[in-house]
Length: 187
Image 1 (cartoon, rainbow, N blue to C red):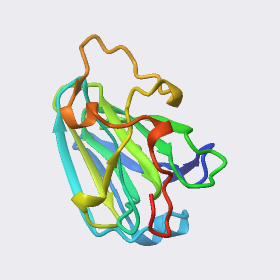
Image 2: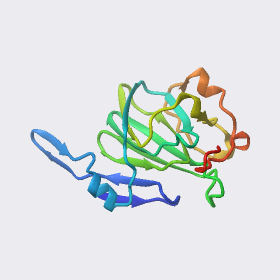
Image 3: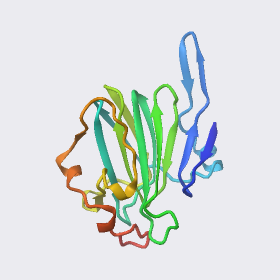
Image 4: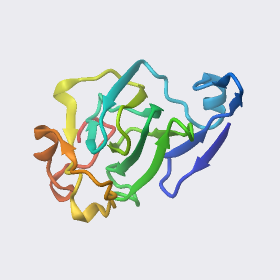
Protein backbone atom coordinates (compact mmCIF):
# COMPACT_ATOMS: atom_id res chain seq x y z
CA UNK A 1 0.00 0.00 0.00
CA UNK A 2 1.05 3.57 -0.58
CA UNK A 3 0.48 6.22 2.11
CA UNK A 4 0.41 9.86 1.04
CA UNK A 5 1.09 12.48 3.70
CA UNK A 6 -0.87 15.73 3.26
CA UNK A 7 -0.16 19.37 4.06
CA UNK A 8 -2.06 18.97 7.35
CA UNK A 9 -0.33 16.83 9.97
CA UNK A 10 -2.14 13.58 10.71
CA UNK A 11 -4.34 13.42 7.62
CA UNK A 12 -3.29 10.64 5.28
CA UNK A 13 -4.45 9.28 1.95
CA UNK A 14 -4.04 5.52 1.65
CA UNK A 15 -3.80 3.72 -1.67
CA UNK A 16 -4.22 -0.01 -0.97
CA UNK A 17 -2.76 -2.56 -3.36
CA UNK A 18 -5.57 -3.69 -5.66
CA UNK A 19 -5.03 -6.87 -7.63
CA UNK A 20 -7.23 -6.87 -10.72
CA UNK A 21 -7.72 -9.62 -13.27
CA UNK A 22 -10.43 -11.03 -15.52
CA UNK A 23 -12.40 -12.21 -12.44
CA UNK A 24 -12.53 -8.76 -10.82
CA UNK A 25 -10.28 -7.57 -8.01
CA UNK A 26 -8.94 -8.37 -4.56
CA UNK A 27 -7.93 -5.73 -2.03
CA UNK A 28 -6.89 -5.83 1.60
CA UNK A 29 -8.87 -2.87 2.97
CA UNK A 30 -7.41 -2.95 6.48
CA UNK A 31 -4.52 -4.69 8.20
CA UNK A 32 -3.85 -3.40 11.71
CA UNK A 33 -0.09 -3.97 11.59
CA UNK A 34 0.42 -2.37 8.17
CA UNK A 35 -1.64 0.67 9.16
CA UNK A 36 0.17 0.98 12.49
CA UNK A 37 3.50 0.82 10.62
CA UNK A 38 2.18 3.65 8.39
CA UNK A 39 1.39 5.82 11.44
CA UNK A 40 -2.35 5.12 11.59
CA UNK A 41 -2.56 3.82 15.14
CA UNK A 42 -6.28 4.29 15.81
CA UNK A 43 -7.98 1.28 17.37
CA UNK A 44 -11.21 1.04 15.37
CA UNK A 45 -14.34 -0.02 17.29
CA UNK A 46 -17.26 0.83 14.99
CA UNK A 47 -17.94 0.57 11.24
CA UNK A 48 -20.60 2.69 9.53
CA UNK A 49 -21.97 2.81 6.01
CA UNK A 50 -24.15 5.25 4.09
CA UNK A 51 -25.96 5.07 0.77
CA UNK A 52 -26.54 8.34 -1.10
CA UNK A 53 -27.61 9.80 -4.39
CA UNK A 54 -25.65 12.31 -6.49
CA UNK A 55 -25.68 15.78 -4.94
CA UNK A 56 -26.00 14.71 -1.30
CA UNK A 57 -23.73 16.55 1.11
CA UNK A 58 -23.18 14.91 4.48
CA UNK A 59 -21.38 16.98 7.08
CA UNK A 60 -19.33 18.63 8.20
CA UNK A 61 -19.44 16.64 11.48
CA UNK A 62 -17.29 15.72 14.47
CA UNK A 63 -17.70 14.65 18.09
CA UNK A 64 -16.27 16.58 21.03
CA UNK A 65 -13.87 14.94 23.50
CA UNK A 66 -13.91 12.55 25.19
CA UNK A 67 -15.98 11.08 22.36
CA UNK A 68 -13.84 12.37 19.48
CA UNK A 69 -13.46 9.99 16.56
CA UNK A 70 -10.65 9.24 14.16
CA UNK A 71 -12.03 7.83 10.90
CA UNK A 72 -10.74 5.72 8.05
CA UNK A 73 -13.14 6.24 5.16
CA UNK A 74 -13.55 4.78 1.68
CA UNK A 75 -16.09 4.41 -1.11
CA UNK A 76 -17.36 0.93 -1.95
CA UNK A 77 -19.51 2.02 -4.91
CA UNK A 78 -19.62 5.39 -6.66
CA UNK A 79 -17.59 8.52 -6.02
CA UNK A 80 -17.36 11.39 -3.49
CA UNK A 81 -15.37 14.51 -2.79
CA UNK A 82 -14.28 13.94 0.81
CA UNK A 83 -13.28 16.85 3.06
CA UNK A 84 -11.63 17.18 6.47
CA UNK A 85 -11.32 20.55 8.27
CA UNK A 86 -8.78 21.06 11.07
CA UNK A 87 -10.53 22.18 14.26
CA UNK A 88 -7.74 21.30 16.72
CA UNK A 89 -7.17 23.93 19.38
CA UNK A 90 -3.81 25.65 18.86
CA UNK A 91 -3.15 23.95 15.52
CA UNK A 92 -1.11 25.98 13.02
CA UNK A 93 -3.51 24.72 10.34
CA UNK A 94 -6.75 25.47 12.23
CA UNK A 95 -9.58 26.12 9.76
CA UNK A 96 -7.69 24.68 6.79
CA UNK A 97 -8.99 21.66 4.92
CA UNK A 98 -7.91 18.77 2.77
CA UNK A 99 -10.22 17.52 0.01
CA UNK A 100 -9.72 14.36 -2.00
CA UNK A 101 -11.75 12.29 -4.42
CA UNK A 102 -12.57 8.80 -3.21
CA UNK A 103 -14.14 6.27 -5.55
CA UNK A 104 -14.71 2.59 -6.03
CA UNK A 105 -12.41 2.87 -9.06
CA UNK A 106 -9.43 4.51 -7.34
CA UNK A 107 -9.83 2.51 -4.10
CA UNK A 108 -8.33 5.32 -2.04
CA UNK A 109 -8.94 5.68 1.67
CA UNK A 110 -8.77 8.85 3.74
CA UNK A 111 -7.57 8.83 7.35
CA UNK A 112 -8.97 11.66 9.44
CA UNK A 113 -7.65 12.04 13.01
CA UNK A 114 -9.67 13.25 15.97
CA UNK A 115 -10.22 16.99 15.99
CA UNK A 116 -11.35 17.36 12.38
CA UNK A 117 -14.78 18.13 10.96
CA UNK A 118 -15.57 15.65 8.20
CA UNK A 119 -18.02 15.58 5.32
CA UNK A 120 -18.44 14.66 1.70
CA UNK A 121 -20.29 15.50 -1.51
CA UNK A 122 -21.64 12.54 -3.48
CA UNK A 123 -20.57 12.76 -7.13
CA UNK A 124 -22.41 9.70 -8.51
CA UNK A 125 -25.81 8.11 -7.89
CA UNK A 126 -26.02 5.01 -5.69
CA UNK A 127 -22.79 5.71 -3.83
CA UNK A 128 -21.92 3.54 -0.84
CA UNK A 129 -19.57 5.18 1.67
CA UNK A 130 -17.91 3.18 4.45
CA UNK A 131 -16.02 4.35 7.49
CA UNK A 132 -14.25 2.90 10.48
CA UNK A 133 -14.30 4.90 13.74
CA UNK A 134 -12.03 4.62 16.76
CA UNK A 135 -14.76 5.67 19.21
CA UNK A 136 -18.46 4.94 19.49
CA UNK A 137 -21.09 7.38 18.26
CA UNK A 138 -22.37 9.60 21.07
CA UNK A 139 -25.36 11.76 19.97
CA UNK A 140 -24.89 14.38 22.70
CA UNK A 141 -21.26 14.92 21.60
CA UNK A 142 -22.00 15.43 17.91
CA UNK A 143 -21.21 18.85 16.46
CA UNK A 144 -21.41 20.37 13.01
CA UNK A 145 -19.82 23.05 10.88
CA UNK A 146 -21.49 24.96 8.05
CA UNK A 147 -20.38 23.11 4.90
CA UNK A 148 -20.54 26.25 2.74
CA UNK A 149 -18.91 28.70 5.15
CA UNK A 150 -16.88 30.95 2.79
CA UNK A 151 -14.05 31.24 5.34
CA UNK A 152 -13.27 27.53 4.82
CA UNK A 153 -12.53 28.00 1.12
CA UNK A 154 -13.92 24.58 0.18
CA UNK A 155 -14.54 24.45 -3.56
CA UNK A 156 -17.59 22.20 -3.83
CA UNK A 157 -17.78 21.42 -7.56
CA UNK A 158 -20.75 22.11 -9.78
CA UNK A 159 -22.00 18.61 -10.57
CA UNK A 160 -25.10 19.54 -12.55
CA UNK A 161 -27.64 18.94 -9.77
CA UNK A 162 -28.72 20.92 -6.72
CA UNK A 163 -27.07 19.89 -3.46
CA UNK A 164 -29.22 17.82 -1.12
CA UNK A 165 -28.46 18.79 2.48
CA UNK A 166 -30.32 17.71 5.60
CA UNK A 167 -32.15 20.38 7.58
CA UNK A 168 -29.82 19.67 10.51
CA UNK A 169 -26.70 20.20 8.39
CA UNK A 170 -28.09 23.48 6.99
CA UNK A 171 -28.24 24.94 10.52
CA UNK A 172 -24.62 24.33 11.61
CA UNK A 173 -22.56 27.34 12.74
CA UNK A 174 -19.70 28.94 10.85
CA UNK A 175 -16.03 28.37 11.70
CA UNK A 176 -15.96 31.65 13.66
CA UNK A 177 -18.76 30.32 15.88
CA UNK A 178 -17.40 26.88 16.77
CA UNK A 179 -15.28 26.04 19.78
CA UNK A 180 -11.95 24.47 18.73
CA UNK A 181 -11.53 20.76 19.40
CA UNK A 182 -9.72 20.15 22.68
CA UNK A 183 -8.67 16.56 23.40
CA UNK A 184 -8.65 17.35 27.14
CA UNK A 185 -12.44 17.26 27.10
CA UNK A 186 -13.70 20.63 25.87
CA UNK A 187 -14.68 21.50 22.33
